[in-house]
Length: 113
Ligand code: AMP
Picture 1 (cartoon, protein in one colour):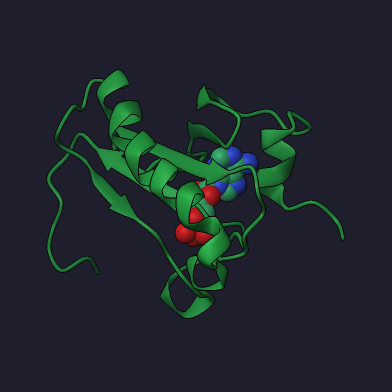
Picture 2 (tube, rainbow, N blue to C red):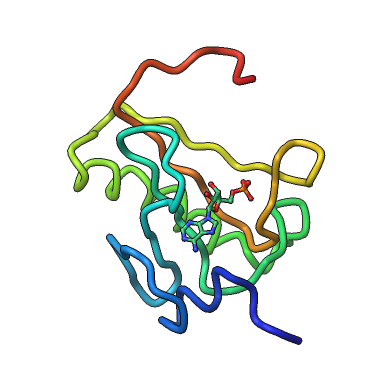
């Protein structure tokens, strides 16, 4: 199967502004930022969307949630950020490789539009 866009970024086949990486995940600046901080945090494993993850991914998903605040803090937004996961095209998912949007640096409305 061909690599997803985000796998290619993880493998450095496509350039990106990588702000964090470890053995399980990579984080890079969004190409069309929607806030002063807009980072994509992606698992190296190409899970298409959150609803396709399973019990074998439990530790990985926990790792992503524990890593996101560290990335926000390292970018100057400790304790004040929004995480978003679009799951499915109808709610805005355009890249079918699980990713957590880390957003910060402006007011955010609730509920999200
Ligand atoms: P989603 O719509 O939830 O699937 O989010 C996909 C995100 O990936 C969007 O915010 C895009 O701006 C972002 N994106 C698409 N291509 C790239 C790229 N080459 N580098 C960084 N971010 C990208």
